[in-house]
Each structure stands twice: as structure tokens, then as C-alpha cells.
Image: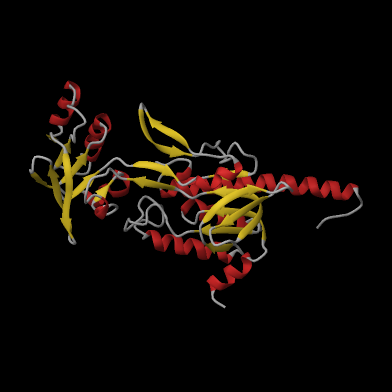
Amino acid sequence: MTTQNSDQEATKAADYDVVIVGGAAAGLSAGLALSRARRKVAVVDSDEPRNAAAEHVHNYLGREGAAPGELYATGREEVRSYGGTIVSGRVENVERAGDGRFRVFLQDGRALACRRVLAASGALDELPAIPGLSAYWGTDVLHCPYCHGWEAGGKALGVLASDLDTAVHQALMWRQWCDDIVLFLNGTGEPGEEQGRDLAARRIRVVPGQVSAVEGDDAGLAGVRLASGEFVPRQALVVLTRLRARAGYLAGVGLAAEEQHFGDLAVGTAVPVDSSGATSVAGVFAAGNLTSPMTQVIGSASAGLAAATAINAELIAEDTAAAVAAARGGVLQG
């Protein structure tokens, strides 16, 4: 029997301590810790990690430069090695059952019962609606200098403004890695006196006008086309994405993602949690980009571990209370 088939067999009529929704860094890290704590765990993985378009993971100590698919494949095998189950599928809804436990419903009709739920389904980057942009997302169209700065170093870089203050900040930040930077104002206004001084001092060229398209071929990004018809050659382009939490399936337990702001700028949505990963709904935890869209891969893994320890602490307290009640009734539990 293959590993995948054995995982599917394990989900039939299964009752878990914890069901984890999401099989990327946060979910797998939590699954590993909880499996090592001898908990019965299922990680539901739709195989849609946020960084799927990226070639490598960076700043992950000990796994620098690993391909995302390789990192998560290793993580799945580590979870399995301690008795955890990986369930291929997509969660459609989560509900609280009459006994206080949860039912996690998958789109294919399966349902998993559990005592706790950890939501680690991540976020979706929504790109500016500019023709050609999405074709180079994760390779030549970038968002994070700490994820891609080293690889973009030495390239002719563009910064596409969708919010002027943020774009100026991005351009000055990316100047640490790239000498040739163009800031495309894209109709967001004109830099103020101080901003203009800073950009000029760092030799960042400012290009007015609306961006109409991003152009390139199979070899990569070639440049930016303005509405005026002017073409500005660029090898890489930095954008500001809107980050939308993948949280729709939590509506059944009364949870929804909330708008997040960077100063006055609305940057996306996230599910609020406390420092342990607990949400406002008892028994439901969340971790990773679902709760903190700007967090990098290693930070998401750390958040998954923190949530796992908090969940296990709750389950230990619950198990102890049940053992005490059983002992009072004359029944000793193992």
C-alpha cells in the first residue's frame, strides 16, 4: 500500500486530537510537534502553498535555498514518521458538533472529527491588475527583498507604485541590493520634497505616467510599457500585493479575517490570534500567513510550533480533568 493510500485509509471514520488545515510551513511544523507529542493528528493539504511560484526558500536556517516543494515534501514525511496523517484535499467548512468537538468537512465529502482545529491555510497574494504581471510572479516580479534581494542583486530593477509612500519606501529598501532602480509612479502622485531628495541621493530614477503592461518572453521579464507607449527595459519588478487570508471555511465557527493596515494603507486581511495562536473561538487556533501575512517561511514554521504547544497544553489539561473525573467514579485511566 502506498503512503498516499495509507493516509486515505486512515481518514475513514477517523477521530483526531487535532486537525490542521494547511500543509505548508506552519501546518507541517505544528503537525510534527503534535505527532511527536503522541497526539493523533491529520494535516489537510491542498498543495497550494503561497510560495509555490518561487524557486527557492531563503533565510530558513539549515535549509537555505531549498525548493518549496522539496521542503514541504520532507515535512510531510517527517510528520508521517511520527504517526501523523497527511490528507490530500481542501477544507470547505468547520463546525462545532453537539459534543463540543469539531467536524472538518472536505470538498470531496469526507468529514474529520477532532478536539481542536489549527487553521494554517495561508494567504493569497493579489497582484495589481496590469497585463503581463502575473506571468512573472515569484521569478521576476517580486515583493520581498529578504526573500529575493540577493538573487535580484545587480539586475535593472523597477518598483511599481500602487501607493506612493510605500513605493518610495520599497525603492529605498531595494537600493541595498540593486544599483539601477526605476520608480514607476503609475499615477499615484509626485514624491514630496523630502522623498525626492532621498530618491535623488540614492540615484533612483523616477518615471511618471501610467503603467499599461509588463512585457517579456520565456526567457524572463523584459521591461515595462507605459500608457504613452514608452518602453523602459527592466529585468525585475517589485510590486505591492494585497494579501487575502484563506479563511472562508472558518465561517461555520464564527471566524472571519479582518482588514489589516500598514499605517493608513489597507494591505489585506488576516485572522486575529493571541500570542499562542488562539483565536476568539475556543478550541480553534491559527498560525502562519493566515494570521500574519508578512511573516516569512521560517517565522510561519515557528508560529506553527507555538500553536502546537499551546494546543497540547489544553489537551493535557482536558485529559487530566477527565482522568480525575474517572478516578472519582472508580475508573482508573491509562
